[in-house]
Image (cartoon, rainbow, N blue to C red):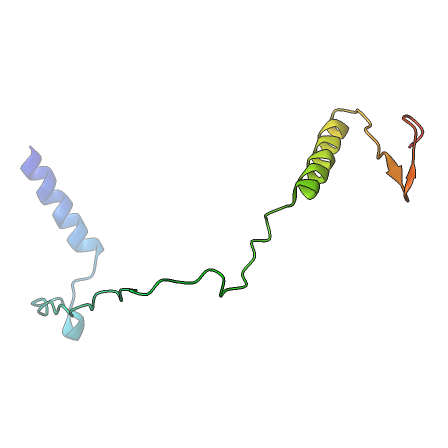
Length: 100
């Protein structure tokens, strides 16, 4: 039964798909050419870290890290409806509850 199914499927595919003709017909495959690849270069000298002026912009000082943590905490609490206003507005200390 399987043989009949395979033959019927092959016949249907031969009707539906065009048979290759002319230059584009698949003949013998061309020989596979392998091109040699050179190995990656090896670095033998040590790199001087002081010679480069690269600075990681995401490294914060402890003060900047503390301020960022306060801002994130205030934003998170604001999503819950809790108002945590700033302690200083324009350099003047604001009492609690008056920053509204």
